[in-house]
Length: 225
Image (cartoon, rainbow, N blue to C red; front, side, top):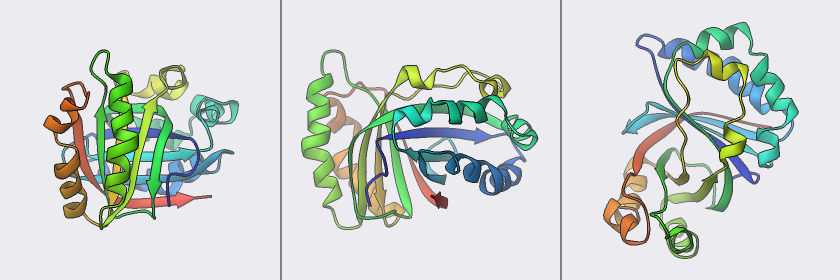
């Protein structure tokens, strides 16, 4: 199954030492169900790092960017629950970005996921995007053991709406640019696909800027409407 809807909210974060059990309990029992209960939210997933950082990656799939900066979602962001207020104090190194889905190919949800935060080199936006969407994405999606290949582009205006929740974090969120997601049946399969298609040398040759952040994760929780 490809990504559901036309937009995603991608969140990477670490947690303060000793806070992982509380974070996972809150995230599973309150936070993700609350978000997926908002009209237009279609699915939420949490991942934990196998290689790279930050430790956690959360992906929300939504009908459109309007869902992710609309009144129903903003109402929750501006009225966080007591449990949310305390749990957000645990967040460290938060990167949070609303993205438009530019390409999504897939056959299901895999147990492992690679995330790449990257962007185009100056003047090479269209060249790099065309290579990702017309050549590399479809080739990866056809690879045995790969169940999804997705390319999403940041919507900065939708991401930077000021909310009460943002005031609770220890510092301003970092922002991703373009987000590549590669889903597979296990870590070895996903990392093998990245070695064959998405090395730093290959990406920069086809138009990527050199500052590429990559990590591999395992799925720990998923909830959909």
